[in-house]
Length: 193
Image 1 (tube, rainbow, N blue to C red):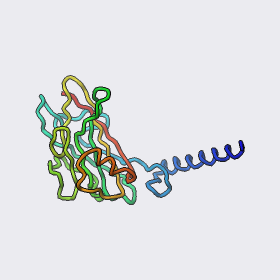
Image 2: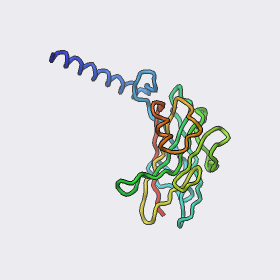
Image 3: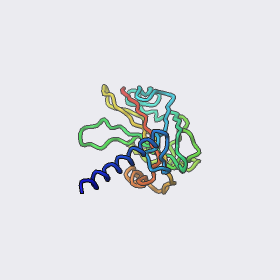
Image 4: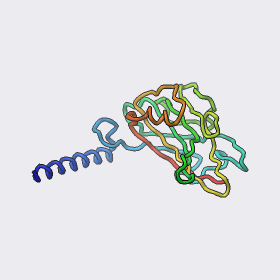
């Protein structure tokens, strides 16, 4: 019995090791069952982990709601659409984080978003934007209360399907993505007034 347990443990370890090796080679994405390489994200206006310029935030409590230009690469084969969720996690303990932007059904042929994505529910390319914390559609700029510094997380998802355009909330978007994420990437910016 002990020998069988030892052999089963060795088999699991070998399988996990192959999956990690496959992921490190950029495999996965459904081909070998490994973890896919992350999407590579670039926001030319600020570095990953850096300060978001006031152009893309608020100044003195006044909102510009101008989204930054964003570029990505590395979506694995079979990607049909890209989704983006921008949220602020620096809240009181127990509170939900704040949704600043959710856009999905971005065509897989796209490799980025331009600066100033229009505040429309459905864009010309079929991308869909949800309502944000400001109860408006599209991008809602960072605007934490002074003098605090908040962290804003841009999460990107490469999906193997186009989602139902009638999705109306972040919770429904997250549920719809379950089982369809082929790769993910994150980019973080900080902001203070």
